[in-house]
Structures are given as structure tokens and as C-alpha cells.
Length: 537
Image (tube, rainbow, N blue to C red):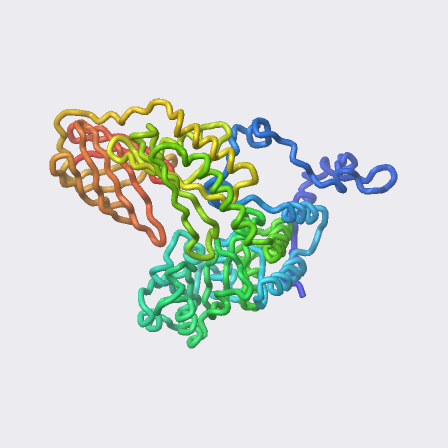
């Protein structure tokens, strides 16, 4: 039976009532999907779309975006994975039909259960959505009043997270309004389970494989109290039998856009059937707290196709191919002086592919790892690789890392040629200019204003200075951190790593000092940049 059989008004009905659609309906005869004179489907319905763009002229370059060759991995910021042909086909096929979404998800749920060895499953809009929907399901189930009252929570309003599992993605549990209870031992875990505990969240990692805080041990304790356990296995391979369900987990979340190479914005939640169904109940098309997590028929069927293909793919052959690509890169670079190579093996089921670290002496090859990464990023074709190490003038031992996970056949040679050219024709790089002169005094208390692209933040720095070295504290509007840095003449540079729940903000302040005033720029890693100014008390 459908969870939601009807809704009072559709957006279309509202528009029709207002007369907005009257003009649009008059031109329906020119639809590109209209049948031809014979009544047969048009070519647009019958043919799979084909790739039309080139490296230099495509739908991205036409809006000023430079596509790239991905030698870094399945990072969301560089658009994740390369979806499989079967996924593209499934998404295209799905776009040609209308279906009732509750019925579709029931069909998908049964299939995901069969494929993964779980009781049930649902497609989600990424693993973060799976975390959030699992949390709501454990808090409210399908109690319609509790669903509608969220984020106001009464009763089960806590999620326990082991300290080793805190991470930026546990915001999926926090965004519901649940109180996070952090534990650091099995004894503390047992003691803090209460009638308020809705769920336990664990991020799968090597740290959770053994010992008192392992997934298996925590699941056993939670089971005694009837508390569901969610395991975040976003980047992992979905083995069957499922290792986390076998260890006692209730629910497991995966990304569909990483190793499974499904739609980038897709995910999968598998496990106990009633909780999976409750999680879907909380998401679109239903008007509950998770309405924003709308998983389209195209994404859902694309995800199902990716899971089906996962259990058909020759994973051993993929590993051999990836290693061969890295060996091709090594062979191209190996004759160069001062180079050495290290193969980094995956530690667990996440991002399971070998990586190649290339090391060299920048004093010999005249380019550092950070300079090479920037050169490849600016080149044509644009190439992204990982972990550039080395900077002038005092850290010339350099390295970069190549991850073949999302490369395509032939791209290994393109990357090898680009790195070879960068190391053999580096051009000229100057050491950074360090201001000379007596270091100004910056010790004392400073009132800081940060001009964000939208909004102003206010902080306080308390600095102590010894020669050119600076240490101190950073008191933010909500969070705090320790500062360290250096003063050269009238310029100052300060660094901090501000711990926030499950995450951190890396601050780098650079500025020019003029008496009791300093101003300059600040960068915050993935959070971008801003300007700042400060006045000494």
C-alpha cells in the first residue's frame, strides 16, 4: 500500500487555478516528444543521447568552466565518480516513464535487499541524506505527529557517537535537532544509553574494526538495550554478505556516487526493513521533515543499476588495470634524477585502489610538489592530482600522489606526459619575498572583525611574541582555537585549527601592521576567503 495515496493540491493545479498555465497549454502541439504522423514514438523518445562535446568545446566550457582529468579520486568538489554506461542508460530509460514513487521505491527496496543481503533498502540523495533520514526514522518512526513536529523532539532526542567517529558528515544526525552524546570507552557508552537514546552513529574505519570500541562490540551493547545502530560506510565497497550487518548493525549507509559509480547525488540505505521504510516515509514525495531529500526516478533507478553492476563487475581486473596505469606513470618519470616511488595500498574497503607517490628533490628538478600541482591544474588539459608537498625555500623535498580510481583508459599516459614535462621543463620559480627589518610588536589583546562575503564576524586574539614568533588564543563567536605564527618587519601571518563538532576550520590570517591596527586577508580552507582587520586594546 502507498504511504501517501493523495495530496490535496499539486503545484500544477494551483497554477491552473490562477490562469498561469492557460497560455502554455496552447503551444503543447509543438512538444518535441509529440508522436509523428504515423503515431509512432518520435526519434527523441527512441534514441539514447550521444556525447557531442569536445575537450575544448562542450556544455561546461560554454559557461566558462574547465573540465578536468581526475587523478585525485571521488571527491565531491570535483564531481565524484564517472557513472557507468549502464547507469546512464537506466537514467535515460527512467526519464521516459511516469511512475508512482512509493510503488517504485518498494520495488527498488526489495531488489536492494536481494542484491546486498539486507532485509530492505532505499535510494537516497547521497549518504548524508541517508544519515539524516535514518536519524529521523529512529527518532520518530512513522508517527505522523512526531514527524510533523520536527525539529522539536520529545522523548528519544539523543544520538550517541563514539569519539573516534566524529566527522564532518555527522551533521546529518545533528541537523535533525538531536543532542549528540560523545563517548570514548565501552563503559561510558553503556552508561550513557538511556530512554532518550534514539540511535548510535558509527563511521566505519580501521579504528572500528577491533577492540572495545569496535562496531561489533558497540552493536552488541546497543542490542541489549534495543537501540538501533547506523554505520556510515559511504566510500566503502558494499560486500555481500554485508560486514556491518553481520557485525550487528541495524542500518548501513553508502554513497552511490563513489565506488559503485552511480549518480553522483545518490546514496543507499540498507538494513532493517521497517526502519528503511520509515526513513523513506520521512523523505520526498512525502511532506515530512526530510522533504528536501527528493530522490528522482532517474537517480533511484540509476542507483539500482549501479548496485546491480557492482555485483557483476570484475573487481580484481579493475585493480590490475589501475596498478598498470600507475606503473606506466612510474616508468615515464623514473629516469629523472632524484625521483623515487612508493605504492600506497588501501587500508580498508573505502576508496579501495592503489595510489602512487612520486618523490623528488626540488633543488635538483627546480619545481616543488605544490608548484607542480598548480601547474597541472592550470594546464591544458587540466589535470588534478593529490597531496602536493614541498615549498620554497626551506622544504624542497617534494612529492605528489596519483589516484587512478576515476581515471579513464589513456589518461595515465596524459598524466605521465604532463608530469614529465613539468619536471623537465619547470620554468623559473622565485623564493617568496620575506620582508626585512625589525619585527613590529603584536603582543596584546586585539579586537578582530572578519568581513565575510555575507556578514561580519567578531573575534578576539590574545597574542604573545618572542622575537619573530607569535603564539596566542583565538576566541571566536562560538568556538575557540590556539594561534601560532610569525612576524616579519610589519607583516604578520597567523594559523589556527578551530575544532567544531565533527570538523575543524583551518584559519590563515595574513596582514600588515600599522601601530595598533592590522588588516589583511584570511583563508579558511574549503570555506573560502575573507578580509579582516583588528585593533589592539
